[in-house]
Amino acid sequence: MPSYQDLLAQARAETTEISVEALRALLDQESPVTLLDVREESEASEGRIPGSVLLPRGNLELRVESLIPRDVTVVVYCASGIRSVFAARTMTSMGYRDVRSLAGGYGRWSDGGHPIERAPSLLRADQRARYRRHLTLSEVGEEGQAKLLAGKVLLLGAGGLGSPAALYLAAAGVGTLGIVDSDVVDPSNLQRQVLHTVDRTGQPKTESAREALNALNPDVNVVAFQERLQASNVERILEGYDVVLDGGDNFPTRYLLNDACVLLGKPLIHGSVFRFEGQVTTVLPGQGPCYRCLYPEPPPPELAPSCAEAGVLGVLPGVIGLLQATEAIKLLLGTGSPLVGRLLTYDALGGRFRELQLRRDPTCAACGEGARPVLSDTPEVCAIAPHARA
Ligand SMILES: [Zn+2]
Image (tube, rainbow, N blue to C red; front, side, top):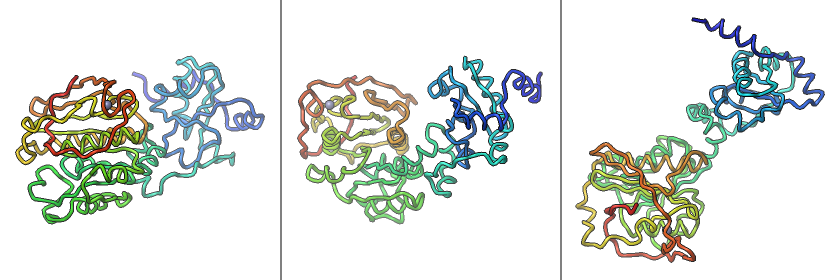
């Protein structure tokens, strides 16, 4: 079995290397050369050769074709010239015609006094430490973390769904969390509303949430709306937020929030739970169905038991709230496939997820052809989810 040294020697034998001096001469002559830095983002943030494309070695095969055409001259470098040898060989095997590995790597380049550049850091040193596990994901990185820190998510409700969602959004470094809730903490909430504690019984949930979230991450600006969401205040409350997370427990606010998000063109992440089942879907106005396409009308009151009677397994809103938080983070980062036109359901007892395809309803009162939602308050019935129309 070949040793690491054997593999390296073989890769070197199959790869063209270029010296630091020869590269400097090429750049000074303004020869067309694409510089590819295959170090990790944390290494590259200390300094790099000016004009480099950063693509950590671990993502090379996955992303290089989308970043660099095959017919250009590429000089690959890492810290010392080892990872770049393997990377150059891989690229050659992928059909790149002229790939060279920088002998001695960035270390020899900077030691030789050749020009380097440092990208201005988007994060403070303590933030770089705190979010390190995000920074090492190329889909997040420093740029993505900066997007999260600039992101504003509005949560309707600091209850069963809002609690886990808010905690993880705060932990992830989402910079502004607006929380709409008019209730106070009650001991009967604590079976599932993990933001709150026994010693904060009687406090407004918005204040209890602020205390918990700032204890977890002082970077997060918690904006408290200690009021009920109504037609008269919904546009004011939603203003300035990038994403809205519906963790409410009643139909009037659910429809109101849907209609307001459609009207204002804001992404809405719907979540609901009942007994042992939960569901989540993402509404991107103009790009997929809205909540009214799915449920045009609230169920009649006789089919909706009162909220106080409706039980829920305490862990279930944890699962659904975190799916909502995940959707919010994906939208802020602009990565992944949101649950648009898809309803993800979770059956806790059966241990099963199911996905239902949803269609936009051209006659929808909120988002249909020529429709313009009218924001209004409707009488309250409890938010027991009827079965989805697939
Ligand atoms: Zn609709």
